[in-house]
Image 1 (cartoon, helix red, strand yellow):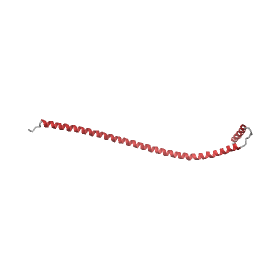
Image 2 (tube, one colour):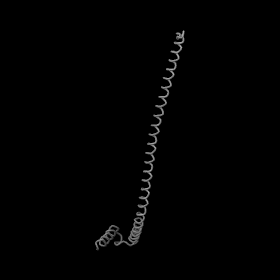
Image 3 (cartoon, helix red, strand yellow):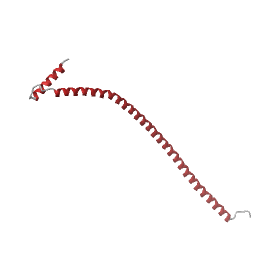
Image 4 (tube, helix red, strand yellow):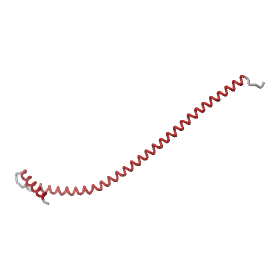
Length: 129
């Protein structure tokens, strides 16, 4: 009797089923890990793109800040001349105001008439070429 006994056949079928179930579980675990690794690689790629985008934006922002600093320095330099000129003109006006306030009234006892007289003289001075 060289045949396969029913017990041996049942054991072989059971071993084959166990092997098949094990292979299915291993294949499922492998595919899950592969999908997770693929997802992680894609996520890393997206993060790298975001990082590169953030670096580019930071560089552009830094360049813009440098440009603004240069513009501010240029405007400060240009403004210094204007401020100096305005200060000189203000000193001239202050001196003229001091002269007007120090002068005796043109019409003693009548501040309004004195002011009108000063305005008339001032207007005559402006009308001259």
